[in-house]
Amino acid sequence: MEIQDKVKRAAHILMLRSHSKPGVRGWELRRALGDEYIKIIYLLDKELSDIGLRVAIKTEKGDEPSSKDDYDDSFFFVTFRSPPDWPEIRGSGWRIDELAALAVSISLIAGRGGKARYEEILDVLTKKIPERRARALITRFIKQGYLSGEDELELGWRTFVEVDVKGLLKTVIGASKQSTS
Amino acid sequence: MYRDELIRILQICREQEDPFKVNVIDLLDRIRKIFPLIKTEEEINLDLEALLSLSDVILKQEDVLEHRTSLLYVDALLILLKLERMSLKDLAESLRRNWRPIVEARGINPNFLSTALDYWGSKELLGKEISTSPEREAEISVELSEELEKELKRIREEIKEEVDYHEFIRMDPLRRAYLISILATRGDISLRKDPITERITIVPSPSTGEKVSMVIEVI
Image 1 (cartoon, rainbow over the protein chains, first blue to last red):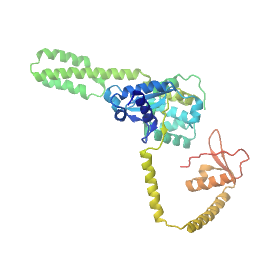
Image 2: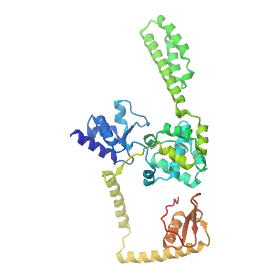
Image 3: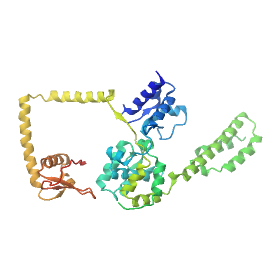
Image 4: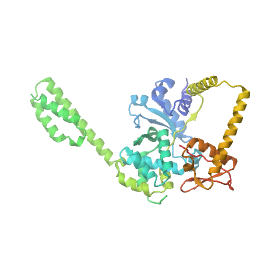
């Protein structure tokens, strides 16, 4: 198979969801593209950059892979290369209060060193949105993989892939223009 | 002779969870003093292992320091205060600026086909249990319609004034939500949503404004 064909194949494998959750394991890509699959992925990443996308690679713990073995066990995703604009967000069905609730949940958990009590997150959320909605949103974030756990919540796999947690905390802490909801 | 002492140093390095509770300088000094005195091959190996374990402790100390100086170790209270004071719009914008959503396309694949097959398989079994002729199906449909109309009438009579939607459906959420949705679609009643509190109420009269579709979480 030509290199260009392999790049196309990699794009199809990564973008067409075949599992219950998105992401493809490194060893699956090795099986489909051969031993030099990492090079193919980097070529794909270069091609995707022209249309504002990128290949994100994360280990099971949410870190960047560091060794060859790490790559085999890591998950590969296609994500936006830069943050989406508001029209794109609205078009994908997200509402402002939903994004805000996710921002609160992630920031609280990260600020507590990786874990925060469900009730504590709910308490902060209910100061901004109705309790029924807050509970429903937390459940939805868990289902989507942004959060995990029950009584004590942690950051889920999707947060590690999609969200720059350090950047979010930096933005929250640096937020100077304060207003109440 | 020095075997036990070296094993003790190894244990301290390996078992202490907080790397800052290990007195690295003291233990390093002890290893340095022991080294010229050890004689057996086992002691030399243990000495080397103890030295390596101490270097691991130093690495752990570095990691902890790095984490504590990073943004992830900011004061939780400060974050809480900031979050509480920020508006929904500012919070959403904070996330947007640091968000790169996953892109994916869904298509038919063996997993989906298998799920679909399971679904139709279960339907087939269900069909075998209820064997009805087209005439009987039509009769059941009429009977159900009459039954449904009676229930709709009863529910409609319950709504005398504007009531909270969730309060109203609470005693039998799915059934009452279903009946309310039919009445609202027919225009017999209308639903109102407060844009600020998001509270949904049932209004006993039809809406005069533009009709829009509403998605309401029932359970």
